Amino acid sequence: MTPAQPHIPRRDPAKMMRLSRLGSLHQCRLSFMRILMRRMAQENWQFSRPVFDIDRKGVGRAVYTAMGPERAYSLVAFAHDLPAEKRSDRVIADAWDTTFALFDGIPDESDIERLAENVPLQEAGRVSQRELSLSRANRSARLWTHVVDRLASGQQPDLQQIEAVGYLMRTTAVYGSGKFGAADRDVISDRAEMQPPFQAEMLSVYLTRTFVRDLVNHIAASRGGTQAVSLDPAIARGLGIGNSTGLGMAPFIVNHPILFNNWMMVREEAISRVRAVARAAPEDVKTFGQLVKQSILSVEHWRSEHPVQLDKLVRLKADLKTLAQHLSSWDATVECPWNTLIEWSERSLSEEGQELVASLILEPYGALVDGLAGCMADGNPDAFRIDGSMPVSAVRALLQECFGWALDLDWSDPANCARAWYVSEEKLEPRMGERFEEPIAAYEQPLAPARDAAAAFSALEAWDPADTVARFLLQHPEHRHTVRRAQMGRVAPYGEIRDNTISTSVMPVDMLRAKLSFFGATHFDPRSDRWVRICMYAGAPYPEELTPGNADLWVYPETAT
Image (cartoon, rainbow, N blue to C red):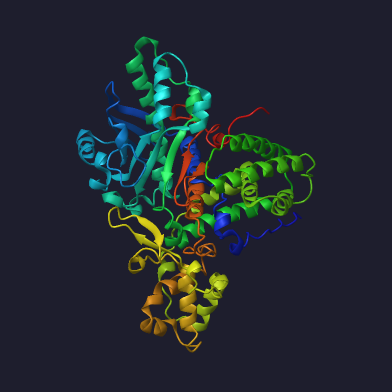
Protein backbone atom coordinates (compact mmCIF):
# COMPACT_ATOMS: atom_id res chain seq x y z
CA MET A 1 0.00 0.00 0.00
CA THR A 2 1.42 3.38 -1.04
CA PRO A 3 1.83 5.74 1.94
CA ALA A 4 -0.27 8.89 1.85
CA GLN A 5 1.41 12.06 0.64
CA PRO A 6 2.13 14.37 3.59
CA HIS A 7 -0.05 17.47 3.77
CA ILE A 8 1.65 20.83 4.31
CA PRO A 9 -0.87 23.67 4.61
CA ARG A 10 -0.47 26.86 2.65
CA ARG A 11 1.19 29.67 4.56
CA ASP A 12 -1.07 31.87 6.68
CA PRO A 13 -2.57 34.89 4.84
CA ALA A 14 -2.06 36.93 8.00
CA LYS A 15 1.67 36.45 7.43
CA MET A 16 1.83 36.51 3.65
CA MET A 17 -0.34 39.59 3.09
CA ARG A 18 1.76 42.02 5.10
CA LEU A 19 3.23 44.74 2.89
CA SER A 20 6.82 44.02 3.89
CA ARG A 21 6.32 40.41 2.79
CA LEU A 22 4.57 41.38 -0.44
CA GLY A 23 7.41 43.81 -1.09
CA SER A 24 9.89 40.93 -0.88
CA LEU A 25 8.36 38.59 -3.46
CA HIS A 26 10.45 37.25 -6.36
CA GLN A 27 9.55 35.86 -9.75
CA CYS A 28 8.92 32.12 -9.97
CA ARG A 29 7.77 29.39 -12.36
CA LEU A 30 4.24 30.77 -12.22
CA SER A 31 5.21 34.30 -13.24
CA PHE A 32 3.31 35.42 -16.31
CA MET A 33 6.34 35.88 -18.59
CA ARG A 34 7.49 32.35 -17.92
CA ILE A 35 4.02 30.88 -18.41
CA LEU A 36 3.94 32.53 -21.85
CA MET A 37 7.47 31.46 -22.82
CA ARG A 38 6.80 27.81 -21.93
CA ARG A 39 3.58 27.79 -23.93
CA MET A 40 5.13 29.38 -27.02
CA ALA A 41 7.98 26.88 -26.98
CA GLN A 42 5.85 23.81 -26.27
CA GLU A 43 3.37 24.75 -29.01
CA ASN A 44 6.13 25.67 -31.47
CA TRP A 45 4.87 29.17 -32.18
CA GLN A 46 6.25 30.68 -35.38
CA PHE A 47 7.54 34.24 -35.58
CA SER A 48 7.99 36.56 -38.54
CA ARG A 49 8.72 40.19 -39.36
CA PRO A 50 6.55 41.00 -42.39
CA VAL A 51 7.20 44.76 -42.17
CA PHE A 52 10.38 46.63 -41.29
CA ASP A 53 10.17 50.04 -42.93
CA ILE A 54 12.71 52.03 -40.91
CA ASP A 55 14.90 54.79 -42.35
CA ARG A 56 18.57 55.56 -41.64
CA LYS A 57 17.64 57.72 -38.63
CA GLY A 58 15.64 54.91 -37.09
CA VAL A 59 12.22 56.37 -37.91
CA GLY A 60 9.42 54.26 -39.37
CA ARG A 61 7.25 51.26 -38.66
CA ALA A 62 7.55 47.50 -38.25
CA VAL A 63 5.30 44.51 -37.68
CA TYR A 64 6.26 41.37 -35.73
CA THR A 65 3.85 38.43 -35.91
CA ALA A 66 3.61 35.51 -33.47
CA MET A 67 1.63 32.58 -34.89
CA GLY A 68 0.21 30.10 -32.40
CA PRO A 69 -1.67 26.86 -33.13
CA GLU A 70 -4.99 28.62 -33.72
CA ARG A 71 -4.40 32.34 -34.21
CA ALA A 72 -1.82 35.06 -34.71
CA TYR A 73 -0.91 38.20 -32.79
CA SER A 74 1.11 41.08 -34.24
CA LEU A 75 3.09 43.86 -32.61
CA VAL A 76 2.79 47.01 -34.71
CA ALA A 77 5.73 49.26 -33.82
CA PHE A 78 6.39 52.92 -34.60
CA ALA A 79 9.85 54.44 -34.14
CA HIS A 80 10.15 58.22 -33.77
CA ASP A 81 12.86 60.88 -33.83
CA LEU A 82 12.46 62.19 -30.30
CA PRO A 83 14.52 65.19 -29.14
CA ALA A 84 16.42 64.41 -25.93
CA GLU A 85 14.66 67.18 -24.01
CA LYS A 86 11.27 65.53 -24.64
CA ARG A 87 12.32 62.11 -23.34
CA SER A 88 10.53 61.46 -20.02
CA ASP A 89 9.30 58.40 -18.14
CA ARG A 90 6.54 60.41 -16.45
CA VAL A 91 2.94 59.64 -17.30
CA ILE A 92 2.44 63.29 -18.31
CA ALA A 93 4.86 62.84 -21.26
CA ASP A 94 3.32 63.37 -24.69
CA ALA A 95 6.06 61.95 -26.95
CA TRP A 96 8.19 58.79 -26.87
CA ASP A 97 10.99 57.11 -28.78
CA THR A 98 8.76 54.20 -29.76
CA THR A 99 5.05 53.39 -29.55
CA PHE A 100 3.29 50.06 -30.02
CA ALA A 101 -0.01 48.24 -30.33
CA LEU A 102 -0.60 44.49 -30.12
CA PHE A 103 -2.98 43.61 -32.96
CA ASP A 104 -5.32 40.65 -32.77
CA GLY A 105 -4.34 38.83 -35.96
CA ILE A 106 -2.23 40.05 -38.89
CA PRO A 107 -2.83 43.70 -39.85
CA ASP A 108 -3.28 44.81 -43.43
CA GLU A 109 -2.13 48.16 -44.78
CA SER A 110 -5.32 49.93 -43.76
CA ASP A 111 -4.96 48.66 -40.20
CA ILE A 112 -1.37 49.91 -40.05
CA GLU A 113 -2.38 53.32 -41.41
CA ARG A 114 -5.18 53.58 -38.85
CA LEU A 115 -2.77 52.70 -36.07
CA ALA A 116 -0.16 55.14 -37.40
CA GLU A 117 -2.66 57.95 -36.84
CA ASN A 118 -3.42 56.93 -33.25
CA VAL A 119 -0.74 54.82 -31.58
CA PRO A 120 1.97 57.55 -31.52
CA LEU A 121 -0.55 59.78 -29.69
CA GLN A 122 -1.09 57.15 -26.95
CA GLU A 123 -3.74 58.52 -24.54
CA ALA A 124 -4.69 61.25 -27.00
CA GLY A 125 -5.49 58.67 -29.68
CA ARG A 126 -7.90 55.77 -29.83
CA VAL A 127 -7.45 52.15 -30.81
CA SER A 128 -10.12 49.53 -31.52
CA GLN A 129 -11.36 46.10 -30.46
CA ARG A 130 -8.77 44.68 -32.87
CA GLU A 131 -6.01 45.84 -30.51
CA LEU A 132 -5.19 44.05 -27.28
CA SER A 133 -2.67 46.50 -25.83
CA LEU A 134 -1.20 49.96 -26.29
CA SER A 135 2.32 50.79 -25.11
CA ARG A 136 5.33 53.03 -25.45
CA ALA A 137 9.05 52.94 -24.62
CA ASN A 138 12.01 55.30 -24.35
CA ARG A 139 15.68 54.67 -24.98
CA SER A 140 18.11 54.37 -22.13
CA ALA A 141 19.92 57.30 -23.70
CA ARG A 142 23.55 56.77 -22.67
CA LEU A 143 23.58 53.01 -23.21
CA TRP A 144 21.73 53.32 -26.52
CA THR A 145 24.28 55.83 -27.82
CA HIS A 146 27.16 53.70 -26.60
CA VAL A 147 25.85 50.53 -28.24
CA VAL A 148 25.10 52.23 -31.57
CA ASP A 149 28.51 53.92 -31.63
CA ARG A 150 30.38 50.71 -30.86
CA LEU A 151 28.46 48.56 -33.34
CA ALA A 152 28.79 51.17 -36.07
CA SER A 153 32.58 51.17 -35.58
CA GLY A 154 32.75 47.38 -35.78
CA GLN A 155 33.06 46.70 -32.04
CA GLN A 156 30.84 45.08 -29.44
CA PRO A 157 29.63 47.26 -26.54
CA ASP A 158 31.38 47.34 -23.19
CA LEU A 159 29.99 44.58 -20.99
CA GLN A 160 30.27 46.61 -17.81
CA GLN A 161 28.02 49.29 -19.27
CA ILE A 162 25.58 46.64 -20.49
CA GLU A 163 25.40 45.01 -17.06
CA ALA A 164 25.07 48.35 -15.25
CA VAL A 165 21.83 49.16 -17.09
CA GLY A 166 20.49 45.86 -18.40
CA TYR A 167 18.22 47.23 -21.16
CA LEU A 168 18.30 49.48 -24.23
CA MET A 169 14.73 50.70 -23.81
CA ARG A 170 12.23 50.84 -21.01
CA THR A 171 8.47 50.91 -21.33
CA THR A 172 6.62 53.63 -19.47
CA ALA A 173 3.17 52.07 -19.90
CA VAL A 174 1.60 48.92 -21.33
CA TYR A 175 -2.15 49.44 -21.39
CA GLY A 176 -4.68 46.67 -22.01
CA SER A 177 -8.10 45.38 -20.99
CA GLY A 178 -10.24 47.98 -22.72
CA LYS A 179 -8.20 51.10 -22.07
CA PHE A 180 -8.37 53.74 -24.83
CA GLY A 181 -10.65 51.54 -26.93
CA ALA A 182 -8.62 48.32 -26.83
CA ALA A 183 -10.41 44.98 -26.49
CA ASP A 184 -11.88 44.11 -23.12
CA ARG A 185 -10.50 41.15 -21.24
CA ASP A 186 -13.69 39.21 -22.02
CA VAL A 187 -12.80 39.24 -25.73
CA ILE A 188 -9.79 36.98 -25.19
CA SER A 189 -10.37 35.30 -21.80
CA ASP A 190 -11.66 32.04 -23.33
CA ARG A 191 -8.57 31.56 -25.50
CA ALA A 192 -6.20 28.99 -24.03
CA GLU A 193 -3.10 31.08 -24.73
CA MET A 194 -4.65 34.18 -23.16
CA GLN A 195 -6.44 32.58 -20.24
CA PRO A 196 -3.66 33.18 -17.66
CA PRO A 197 -3.44 36.83 -16.60
CA PHE A 198 -1.62 39.48 -18.65
CA GLN A 199 -0.53 37.18 -21.47
CA ALA A 200 -1.28 39.78 -24.17
CA GLU A 201 0.82 42.37 -22.33
CA MET A 202 3.66 39.90 -21.77
CA LEU A 203 3.64 38.99 -25.48
CA SER A 204 3.73 42.67 -26.40
CA VAL A 205 6.82 43.25 -24.24
CA TYR A 206 8.53 40.11 -25.59
CA LEU A 207 8.08 41.24 -29.20
CA THR A 208 9.09 44.79 -28.23
CA ARG A 209 12.42 43.43 -27.00
CA THR A 210 12.99 41.81 -30.40
CA PHE A 211 12.15 45.05 -32.19
CA VAL A 212 14.58 47.00 -29.96
CA ARG A 213 17.42 44.61 -30.81
CA ASP A 214 16.65 44.85 -34.53
CA LEU A 215 16.37 48.64 -34.37
CA VAL A 216 19.73 49.17 -32.71
CA ASN A 217 21.38 46.85 -35.24
CA HIS A 218 19.66 48.69 -38.11
CA ILE A 219 20.72 52.16 -36.96
CA ALA A 220 24.30 51.00 -36.37
CA ALA A 221 24.45 49.40 -39.85
CA SER A 222 23.02 52.56 -41.43
CA ARG A 223 25.65 54.68 -39.73
CA GLY A 224 28.65 52.38 -40.00
CA GLY A 225 28.15 50.81 -43.40
CA THR A 226 30.36 47.84 -44.20
CA GLN A 227 32.43 48.15 -41.00
CA ALA A 228 29.37 47.86 -38.72
CA VAL A 229 28.64 44.65 -36.83
CA SER A 230 25.48 43.28 -35.27
CA LEU A 231 25.05 42.91 -31.54
CA ASP A 232 26.56 39.64 -30.36
CA PRO A 233 23.69 37.20 -29.68
CA ALA A 234 24.99 36.40 -26.20
CA ILE A 235 25.11 40.10 -25.30
CA ALA A 236 21.68 40.70 -26.83
CA ARG A 237 20.26 37.80 -24.82
CA GLY A 238 21.39 39.43 -21.59
CA LEU A 239 19.47 42.60 -22.39
CA GLY A 240 15.86 42.87 -21.24
CA ILE A 241 13.22 45.54 -21.51
CA GLY A 242 13.21 48.03 -18.69
CA ASN A 243 10.05 49.40 -17.18
CA SER A 244 9.23 52.45 -15.09
CA THR A 245 6.15 51.92 -12.94
CA GLY A 246 4.59 54.43 -10.59
CA LEU A 247 1.58 54.86 -8.36
CA GLY A 248 -0.86 54.09 -11.16
CA MET A 249 -0.25 50.39 -10.61
CA ALA A 250 -0.25 50.36 -6.81
CA PRO A 251 -4.04 50.27 -6.19
CA PHE A 252 -4.45 47.26 -8.49
CA ILE A 253 -4.04 44.67 -5.76
CA VAL A 254 -6.53 46.52 -3.56
CA ASN A 255 -9.09 46.93 -6.35
CA HIS A 256 -8.88 43.30 -7.51
CA PRO A 257 -9.08 41.16 -4.34
CA ILE A 258 -10.34 38.01 -6.08
CA LEU A 259 -7.76 38.18 -8.85
CA PHE A 260 -4.83 38.92 -6.55
CA ASN A 261 -6.01 36.23 -4.16
CA ASN A 262 -5.85 33.75 -7.04
CA TRP A 263 -2.27 34.73 -7.82
CA MET A 264 -1.18 34.44 -4.21
CA MET A 265 -3.18 31.28 -3.51
CA VAL A 266 -1.75 29.54 -6.57
CA ARG A 267 1.79 30.49 -5.56
CA GLU A 268 1.19 29.32 -2.00
CA GLU A 269 -0.43 26.10 -3.22
CA ALA A 270 2.60 25.42 -5.42
CA ILE A 271 4.95 26.01 -2.48
CA SER A 272 2.79 23.77 -0.30
CA ARG A 273 2.88 20.96 -2.88
CA VAL A 274 6.66 21.03 -3.12
CA ARG A 275 7.05 21.20 0.66
CA ALA A 276 4.95 18.02 0.83
CA VAL A 277 7.20 16.06 -1.56
CA ALA A 278 8.21 13.12 0.62
CA ARG A 279 11.56 12.38 -1.05
CA ALA A 280 13.67 14.65 -3.24
CA ALA A 281 15.34 13.05 -6.24
CA PRO A 282 19.09 13.73 -6.39
CA GLU A 283 18.75 15.51 -9.74
CA ASP A 284 16.15 17.88 -8.24
CA VAL A 285 18.44 18.70 -5.34
CA LYS A 286 21.25 19.33 -7.83
CA THR A 287 19.04 21.66 -9.91
CA PHE A 288 18.11 23.63 -6.81
CA GLY A 289 21.75 23.97 -5.76
CA GLN A 290 22.76 25.17 -9.21
CA LEU A 291 20.00 27.77 -9.23
CA VAL A 292 21.13 29.05 -5.83
CA LYS A 293 24.57 29.66 -7.40
CA GLN A 294 22.97 31.44 -10.34
CA SER A 295 20.83 33.51 -7.98
CA ILE A 296 23.98 34.66 -6.18
CA LEU A 297 25.27 35.93 -9.53
CA SER A 298 21.95 37.61 -10.31
CA VAL A 299 21.90 39.45 -6.99
CA GLU A 300 25.50 40.60 -7.57
CA HIS A 301 24.23 42.33 -10.73
CA TRP A 302 21.24 43.88 -8.95
CA ARG A 303 21.75 47.64 -8.71
CA SER A 304 19.80 50.20 -6.71
CA GLU A 305 20.42 53.59 -5.12
CA HIS A 306 17.37 53.61 -2.87
CA PRO A 307 18.36 53.20 0.81
CA VAL A 308 15.56 50.74 1.60
CA GLN A 309 16.44 48.49 -1.33
CA LEU A 310 20.17 48.81 -0.64
CA ASP A 311 19.57 47.53 2.88
CA LYS A 312 17.46 44.67 1.54
CA LEU A 313 20.20 43.77 -0.95
CA VAL A 314 22.81 43.66 1.81
CA ARG A 315 20.60 41.25 3.74
CA LEU A 316 19.78 39.20 0.65
CA LYS A 317 23.44 38.74 -0.21
CA ALA A 318 24.09 37.65 3.38
CA ASP A 319 21.07 35.32 3.15
CA LEU A 320 22.41 33.65 0.01
CA LYS A 321 25.80 33.17 1.65
CA THR A 322 24.08 31.62 4.67
CA LEU A 323 21.95 29.44 2.37
CA ALA A 324 24.97 28.19 0.43
CA GLN A 325 26.71 27.29 3.69
CA HIS A 326 23.58 25.50 4.92
CA LEU A 327 23.26 23.47 1.72
CA SER A 328 26.79 22.13 2.16
CA SER A 329 25.57 20.15 5.18
CA TRP A 330 21.84 19.90 4.40
CA ASP A 331 20.47 16.38 4.51
CA ALA A 332 18.19 16.22 1.48
CA THR A 333 17.37 12.56 2.12
CA VAL A 334 15.10 13.24 5.10
CA GLU A 335 11.34 13.07 4.72
CA CYS A 336 9.90 16.27 3.20
CA PRO A 337 13.31 17.92 2.75
CA TRP A 338 11.88 21.05 1.09
CA ASN A 339 9.65 21.60 4.10
CA THR A 340 12.63 21.42 6.41
CA LEU A 341 14.44 23.90 4.18
CA ILE A 342 11.54 26.37 4.26
CA GLU A 343 11.27 26.04 8.04
CA TRP A 344 15.02 26.65 8.33
CA SER A 345 14.77 29.74 6.09
CA GLU A 346 12.04 31.19 8.31
CA ARG A 347 14.38 30.91 11.29
CA SER A 348 17.54 32.03 9.55
CA LEU A 349 16.87 34.46 6.69
CA SER A 350 15.26 37.84 6.04
CA GLU A 351 11.91 38.06 4.27
CA GLU A 352 13.75 38.66 0.97
CA GLY A 353 15.76 35.49 1.48
CA GLN A 354 12.77 33.45 2.63
CA GLU A 355 10.75 34.38 -0.44
CA LEU A 356 13.65 33.67 -2.79
CA VAL A 357 13.99 30.17 -1.31
CA ALA A 358 10.23 29.68 -1.63
CA SER A 359 10.44 30.56 -5.33
CA LEU A 360 13.53 28.44 -5.99
CA ILE A 361 12.13 25.21 -4.55
CA LEU A 362 9.45 25.26 -7.28
CA GLU A 363 11.97 25.11 -10.14
CA PRO A 364 12.63 21.35 -10.22
CA TYR A 365 8.90 20.56 -10.03
CA GLY A 366 7.29 21.88 -13.18
CA ALA A 367 5.19 18.74 -13.58
CA LEU A 368 3.78 19.27 -10.10
CA VAL A 369 3.03 23.00 -10.20
CA ASP A 370 2.88 24.37 -13.77
CA GLY A 371 -0.71 23.25 -14.27
CA LEU A 372 -1.80 25.68 -11.56
CA ALA A 373 -1.29 28.53 -14.04
CA GLY A 374 -4.81 27.87 -15.29
CA CYS A 375 -6.21 28.86 -11.89
CA MET A 376 -4.71 32.37 -11.80
CA ALA A 377 -7.39 34.24 -13.76
CA ASP A 378 -10.45 35.77 -12.12
CA GLY A 379 -13.32 33.48 -13.04
CA ASN A 380 -15.66 34.05 -10.10
CA PRO A 381 -18.12 36.89 -10.91
CA ASP A 382 -20.56 35.61 -8.27
CA ALA A 383 -18.10 36.64 -5.57
CA PHE A 384 -18.91 40.29 -6.26
CA ARG A 385 -22.60 39.88 -5.37
CA ILE A 386 -23.48 40.88 -1.83
CA ASP A 387 -25.40 38.23 0.11
CA GLY A 388 -28.00 40.44 1.76
CA SER A 389 -29.44 37.55 3.76
CA MET A 390 -26.26 37.11 5.79
CA PRO A 391 -26.77 37.87 9.49
CA VAL A 392 -25.03 40.88 10.96
CA SER A 393 -23.17 38.55 13.33
CA ALA A 394 -21.66 36.64 10.40
CA VAL A 395 -20.50 39.83 8.68
CA ARG A 396 -18.86 41.01 11.88
CA ALA A 397 -17.11 37.66 12.17
CA LEU A 398 -15.77 37.99 8.61
CA LEU A 399 -14.52 41.50 9.34
CA GLN A 400 -12.87 40.25 12.50
CA GLU A 401 -11.14 37.47 10.57
CA CYS A 402 -9.71 39.66 7.81
CA PHE A 403 -9.24 42.95 9.65
CA GLY A 404 -8.97 42.05 13.32
CA TRP A 405 -5.54 43.65 13.42
CA ALA A 406 -7.06 46.99 12.31
CA LEU A 407 -10.05 47.17 14.65
CA ASP A 408 -8.06 48.42 17.63
CA LEU A 409 -6.09 51.09 15.74
CA ASP A 410 -6.86 54.69 16.63
CA TRP A 411 -8.13 55.95 13.30
CA SER A 412 -8.34 59.50 14.63
CA ASP A 413 -4.55 59.51 15.03
CA PRO A 414 -3.11 61.51 12.08
CA ALA A 415 -0.32 58.96 11.72
CA ASN A 416 -2.86 56.25 10.89
CA CYS A 417 -4.69 58.24 8.21
CA ALA A 418 -1.99 60.61 6.98
CA ARG A 419 -2.38 59.71 3.30
CA ALA A 420 -5.29 59.78 0.86
CA TRP A 421 -5.55 58.13 -2.56
CA TYR A 422 -7.17 60.11 -5.35
CA VAL A 423 -7.26 60.23 -9.16
CA SER A 424 -5.45 63.02 -10.97
CA GLU A 425 -7.69 65.12 -13.20
CA GLU A 426 -5.02 65.54 -15.88
CA LYS A 427 -4.09 61.90 -16.52
CA LEU A 428 -6.85 59.99 -14.71
CA GLU A 429 -4.12 58.09 -12.85
CA PRO A 430 -4.10 57.13 -9.13
CA ARG A 431 -2.09 59.41 -6.89
CA MET A 432 -1.39 59.53 -3.15
CA GLY A 433 -1.28 62.79 -1.23
CA GLU A 434 -0.97 64.13 2.29
CA ARG A 435 -4.46 64.29 3.79
CA PHE A 436 -3.67 67.09 6.26
CA GLU A 437 -1.52 69.18 3.94
CA GLU A 438 -3.45 69.08 0.64
CA PRO A 439 -7.14 69.69 -0.16
CA ILE A 440 -7.72 66.15 -1.43
CA ALA A 441 -9.93 64.45 1.18
CA ALA A 442 -13.09 65.20 -0.80
CA TYR A 443 -11.68 63.27 -3.76
CA GLU A 444 -10.47 60.23 -1.82
CA GLN A 445 -10.80 56.82 -3.47
CA PRO A 446 -11.88 53.72 -1.46
CA LEU A 447 -8.33 52.39 -1.13
CA ALA A 448 -8.20 52.14 2.67
CA PRO A 449 -9.96 48.81 3.33
CA ALA A 450 -8.67 48.54 6.89
CA ARG A 451 -10.01 51.93 7.98
CA ASP A 452 -13.33 51.27 6.24
CA ALA A 453 -13.58 47.81 7.84
CA ALA A 454 -13.10 49.33 11.30
CA ALA A 455 -15.84 51.87 10.59
CA ALA A 456 -18.25 49.19 9.32
CA PHE A 457 -17.48 46.91 12.27
CA SER A 458 -18.26 49.74 14.66
CA ALA A 459 -21.50 50.65 12.86
CA LEU A 460 -22.66 47.01 12.90
CA GLU A 461 -22.19 46.80 16.65
CA ALA A 462 -25.47 48.65 17.26
CA TRP A 463 -27.48 46.17 15.19
CA ASP A 464 -29.21 42.98 16.26
CA PRO A 465 -26.79 40.14 15.47
CA ALA A 466 -29.65 38.16 13.91
CA ASP A 467 -30.72 40.99 11.59
CA THR A 468 -29.79 40.80 7.92
CA VAL A 469 -26.98 42.83 6.44
CA ALA A 470 -29.41 43.97 3.71
CA ARG A 471 -31.39 45.94 6.30
CA PHE A 472 -28.15 47.41 7.64
CA LEU A 473 -27.03 48.49 4.15
CA LEU A 474 -30.36 50.13 3.38
CA GLN A 475 -29.56 52.59 6.16
CA HIS A 476 -25.77 52.59 5.67
CA PRO A 477 -25.01 52.26 1.93
CA GLU A 478 -21.58 53.78 2.55
CA HIS A 479 -20.50 50.38 3.89
CA ARG A 480 -21.54 48.34 0.83
CA HIS A 481 -18.01 48.03 -0.52
CA THR A 482 -16.71 46.86 2.86
CA VAL A 483 -19.43 44.22 3.28
CA ARG A 484 -18.70 43.01 -0.25
CA ARG A 485 -14.98 42.68 0.55
CA ALA A 486 -15.72 40.88 3.82
CA GLN A 487 -17.90 38.34 2.01
CA MET A 488 -15.26 37.89 -0.70
CA GLY A 489 -12.91 36.79 2.06
CA ARG A 490 -14.81 33.50 2.25
CA VAL A 491 -13.36 32.47 -1.13
CA ALA A 492 -10.35 34.78 -1.21
CA PRO A 493 -8.29 34.38 1.96
CA TYR A 494 -5.32 36.12 0.30
CA GLY A 495 -7.45 38.95 -1.07
CA GLU A 496 -6.75 41.58 1.60
CA ILE A 497 -3.55 43.40 2.46
CA ARG A 498 -3.04 43.04 6.21
CA ASP A 499 -1.56 46.52 6.59
CA ASN A 500 -2.68 50.14 6.66
CA THR A 501 -2.57 51.59 3.13
CA ILE A 502 -2.98 55.21 4.28
CA SER A 503 -0.55 55.39 7.20
CA THR A 504 2.33 57.80 7.36
CA SER A 505 4.76 54.88 6.93
CA VAL A 506 3.12 53.07 4.00
CA MET A 507 5.49 52.18 1.13
CA PRO A 508 3.51 51.96 -2.12
CA VAL A 509 6.51 50.35 -3.83
CA ASP A 510 5.71 47.21 -1.83
CA MET A 511 2.41 46.98 -3.72
CA LEU A 512 4.21 47.62 -7.01
CA ARG A 513 6.75 44.90 -6.36
CA ALA A 514 4.08 42.38 -5.40
CA LYS A 515 2.33 42.78 -8.74
CA LEU A 516 5.50 43.05 -10.81
CA SER A 517 6.95 39.88 -9.26
CA PHE A 518 4.00 37.98 -10.71
CA PHE A 519 4.77 39.52 -14.10
CA GLY A 520 8.24 38.01 -13.75
CA ALA A 521 10.18 41.22 -13.20
CA THR A 522 13.69 41.19 -11.75
CA HIS A 523 16.18 43.68 -10.30
CA PHE A 524 13.68 45.98 -8.64
CA ASP A 525 15.16 49.46 -8.31
CA PRO A 526 12.90 51.85 -6.35
CA ARG A 527 13.51 55.48 -7.29
CA SER A 528 11.38 56.66 -4.36
CA ASP A 529 8.70 55.12 -2.16
CA ARG A 530 6.27 55.62 -5.08
CA TRP A 531 7.90 54.36 -8.28
CA VAL A 532 10.27 51.65 -9.34
CA ARG A 533 12.34 50.54 -12.31
CA ILE A 534 12.56 46.89 -13.24
CA CYS A 535 13.84 44.62 -15.99
CA MET A 536 11.80 42.10 -18.02
CA TYR A 537 12.96 39.19 -20.19
CA ALA A 538 16.68 39.67 -19.47
CA GLY A 539 18.33 36.38 -20.47
CA ALA A 540 15.34 35.14 -22.46
CA PRO A 541 15.89 33.50 -25.86
CA TYR A 542 14.76 35.55 -28.84
CA PRO A 543 12.04 34.15 -31.13
CA GLU A 544 14.50 32.52 -33.53
CA GLU A 545 16.23 30.79 -30.59
CA LEU A 546 13.20 29.66 -28.58
CA THR A 547 12.93 25.93 -27.87
CA PRO A 548 11.37 23.83 -25.08
CA GLY A 549 14.90 23.32 -23.77
CA ASN A 550 15.61 27.03 -23.16
CA ALA A 551 12.12 28.41 -22.53
CA ASP A 552 12.20 28.33 -18.74
CA LEU A 553 15.36 28.79 -16.70
CA TRP A 554 16.70 31.71 -18.77
CA VAL A 555 15.76 34.03 -15.91
CA TYR A 556 18.76 32.76 -13.92
CA PRO A 557 22.10 34.03 -15.32
CA GLU A 558 24.54 31.34 -16.34
CA THR A 559 27.52 30.63 -14.14
CA ALA A 560 30.16 27.96 -13.86
CA THR A 561 28.91 24.65 -12.50
